[in-house]
Length: 167
Image (cartoon, rainbow, N blue to C red; front, side, top):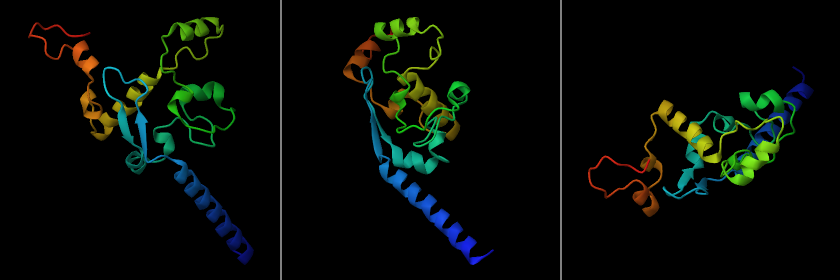
């Protein structure tokens, strides 16, 4: 290998390393997942710990900043989509997919392209619980977030042993 090739290789490695450091600096250490907290409190998500556990960002995210999607369902149509600027779950998953506004919007979509996109709560739970089961992590609701007073009332925490639940 010539000196020029070695220098070019080292420069490319430096660029890749520097871009990785920039992306790492932009990632939050912790994230509050509390937009839907009603029956249970939100989750204080330890992003840094999960980064250490995962192979790369796409382990949890369908895509990473600066790339397109890798999700097999999304890639069918979005394989040639532009790179994304953020990787927030709510960029694609709605807080309230069953609201009248969203149901009416979907009814107007004649091709029904995104009718099967899970809501935000389902996306969190499918992703988190599935991985927690594989990795022997916590899987009970209150392992990750405590029940609220509204949750206690809904689930009849102090009810007699009648066998009735809030379901």
